[in-house]
Length: 362
Image 1: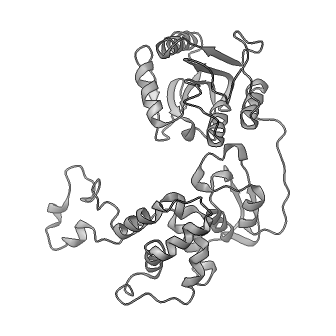
Image 2: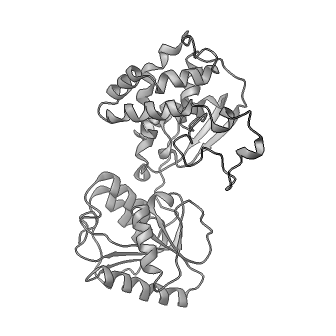
Image 3: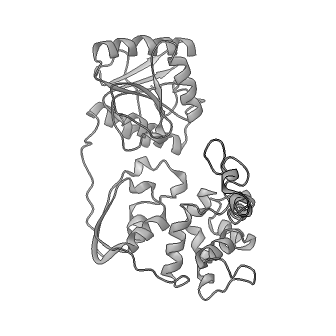
């Protein structure tokens, strides 16, 4: 659903809403919501969007989107029972009555809808509102912004305003952003002149770590022998999953005893993988599981995912389970592994309980 709403193919049907009037029965809806209903709730328009995506969006997204959109235009339980004493409409947990039910999306709007509405304003399909304009805007991690989101940011620039577009194409790990390179990103912001600067030296990781990270994205990564000539990158082959956990517990306990000030991140591939690693490491250490972005940046050991650490840094990073089955040769996994590895400032430890993934094969 998010993939569809953020895809630039949505634009192929937006001109139809210029001069458009909602059918009878929907004319009492606010103008913006009426257009969202007939954009993301219309099967024929969704078919054309999926067709324009050239295979990027699956046909099943149409059914999912229609069901979600219709649920957003349902009446909330509180409103449907507005004649009932308000005290009787308060849930024991303090949440809305629809929370956690099939009705939880009733009378809502998605964050992904907002750039679409700005695009409709740009086409004259919605009235323009006077909003604050800015002389300069800085967009960090720009590779994670979808085309219509960048275009909406361009709307917020003053006529002679400037923009700084910063990011790393190797960290384009959010597939729903549909990042298509820096030239396409610049075009969305609609500025006439650009000056491009490519950083030659990474500011975060020591050379051995940054070199390995770049090699992962180009398919040329080779792991050092154990012990390595440069201690910044270690690669340990363990005999089994149990041996891998025991090795991590033993050495990380020794490291934290020696350097209690260190921030150490064990970075998993998925949330499920992170939960398993956290459970295993908790048998010998005191790790903290962070899946919701609530990083405290305090000394100690955390377990998290590559998707959660983009833009962050840690003293040490540990990446376990680098097996062929768990990390096969896929572009998105190479990017994810690059992000995970380059979060380390001065020590990166890679482990596998069997043979190495071809992404980092010796």
